[in-house]
Amino acid sequence: MAALAVAKPKFTETFVDNKRKDDIRMANIAASQSVADAVRTSLGPRGMDKMISTSSGEVIITNDGATILNKMEVLQPAAKFLVELSKSQDVVAGDGTTTVVVIAGALLKASLTLLSSGIHPTIVSEALNKASIKAVEILSAMAIPVELSDRDSLVKSASTSLNSKVVSQYSSLLAPLAVDAVLSVVDPAKPDLVDLKDIKIVKKLGGTVDDTELVKGLVFDKKFQISPPKTDIEQSIVVSDYTQMDRILKEERNYILGMIKKIKATGCNVLLLQKSILRDAVTDLSLHYLAKAKILVIKDVERDEIEFITKTLNCLPISNIEHFRAEKLGYADLVEEVSLGDGGKIVKITGIKDIGRTNCVLVRGSNQLVLDEAERSLHDALCVVRCLVNKKFLIAGGGAPEIELSRQLGAWAKVLQGMEGYCVKAFAETLEVIPYSLAENAGLNPITIVTELRNRHAQGEINAGINVRKGQITNIIDENVVQPLLVSTSAITLATECVRMILKIDDIVTVR
Ligand code: ADP
Ligand code: MG
Image (cartoon, rainbow, N blue to C red; front, side, top):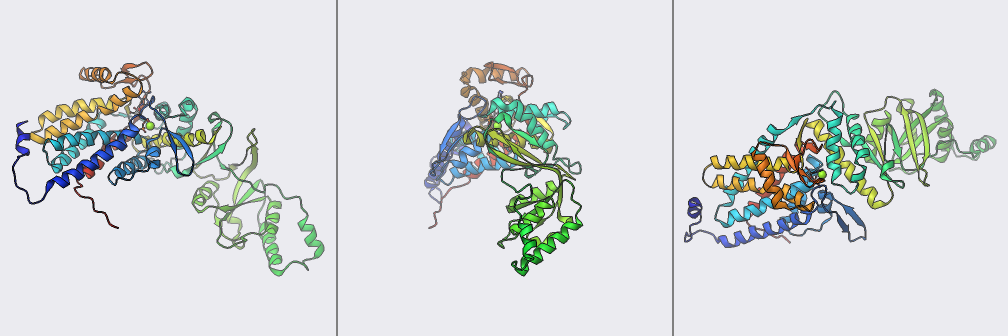
């Protein structure tokens, strides 16, 4: 405390008026903190959900931090950082988007206390950085290595992330599905990388989330002309002997028939027609001949879907029927229109020859709210598995890592000197916000729970965590509550970065 008294000399002259800068910093912190408070009640398996009503009248029910913040209309510039923070966590790890904001909010609160006791923002910022680096070291030391062949552990981590979702009752279906979907797109040549763009999620209203399935192939929620049309266009053309057709149509017909002859049609071939800026890239007449030759034309494909479809079907897109060549076709055993039993229909393409490393997940839900949340939850589960592919380490959940960090960082703070140690100690205490909120949201007494957690960890039980179902503290690994190391480390690193950024701002300049 003696050091602190030195840090804030009461009567020092300064060149600039620091009062305004302090005020701006305080206002920024207060605004950001209120954003963090808004999502804190959503943390954990017993967290509350938010109902978001947008200006366009749309209603969303979600538990996902990134979605809640994304939809919130935040006006204060510094508070917008927290929205961005949640987005970055979503990009880096995909899960932990509430956690990261809750940690940032608590760190801001702690910084406020540090600043008001006279420590300079730069010193606070440096100390926080040092503490976060140490935190990552401690977490990495606690982590348990996991093999991709250990499907059980992967499923457990995916379940943990689904536990806290509105659709948690379906986690026994969605967790293994997420694991299979991700593992099957891993390229053995690049065993650490997963591109989630290789997993296409198709939402289809109807049924229940239980009907969600993984399809090895392609699923489209649009109509195609699958069988040759029953009209006798061809006949009428033959009869009229082209006299009525203009020359272009005749040429097109000959061209297509010529190309088709070269293709040995067995099963079904698929031709991908890129959405063209030219109108009429393909005429009804061409479609007719192509359908007769068992060539399915996928029309009007959006630009962002092209990559996925070409990869899956092993075909090449064309922008006009004149570019149609045999080698551009994909081949599939079966293209079928499947009735989903409730009036809905989808088109499924399966038995694809030389299928790329891709997957489709057909997500079902009885209403739009559930369907959308199921998709977001599945995204989190997929991200969790992706995290484990990137970095093959697991840690316990249920507040265990945060309490352990808090304990070890607290001990480390005592070794450090002066104000740095003081700030690191504050950082360590801040991390207790996670177990505290988990307990509070589960209706448990947070103070009793956190105190007991501290005791258990002091006795060396590094995996003691909050068992929200039983309302007590147990070895959380035995409860199968595990999560990827990457989710926790990135939450701490990103939250610290964000808080440091807010601390460094001492003025807001508005430009008209
Ligand atoms: P986020 O958006 O940050 O992922 P969640 O609402 O998913 O937030 O909550 C994640 C937190 O909940 C993690 O700290 C995780 O360890 C914890 N958690 C998840 N499942 C359980 C469980 N069954 N028991 C205790 N804690 C859990
Ligand atoms: Mg989660």
